[in-house]
Length: 295
Image (cartoon, rainbow, N blue to C red; front, top):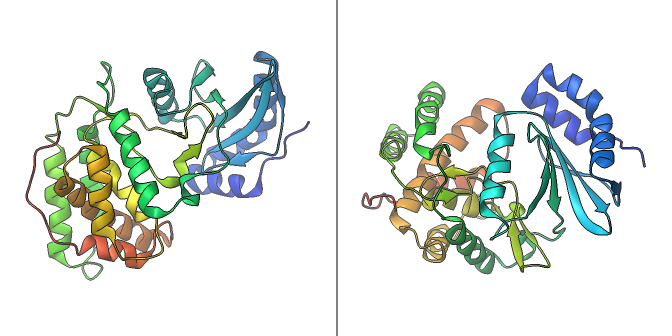
């Protein structure tokens, strides 16, 4: 079965990776063929994709699996390392990986995601997964605190006068500075939205695509609550997530506020529409809770 690269994947990779995307897109069908030969797999369905990866359902010696081929970048190795460390506890199992980790053979899950579940229940499920993923991080795991320098630099570059009130941008800066001192020793997913939690057989729900940082689980509250088309009940959802994740709801709310500021400014500069504008504005203007320490 020959592989046709989905047009939306090609567009997304070109937008994100520029000229380097063309060579990878040309090579992609061959990469699929090579992986199928290497791991004795047969394509068993239509391709799926994200922003930078192609995912194919495959059969390997009668076992249902998924072949994921990503544009090679630094996150590939971190994803593979995180999946290996989690060892199937709350996430899909890693079955095989290429030397550079850009090609992975994974336990097959889905296609149903948490997006098919009532939002309150889905938020609790995501929070419970965040709690389970908060296991001691192995040596060498990238810390969330190490991302705060680039995060602050991007915020300062994009926070042009008139886009948002200065006080809200300053609140975001304060949270970023706070996270720069985060010494949490446990893992977090890093991109735990409903589309990254899929129905499974081995467990009811399993997460995919972990970024695999070391840091407070409160950071993941934003992607859990922000991908909505309604701006109501956000505070209640943050609290619901935090209780299930066993993380501080005040810190989770502050992470949501700061990440919403960054997301809003990024969308204003790029013309993107990843998040609903009213939802972002509601998160940005929420009351600022006390400053707890990261767990």
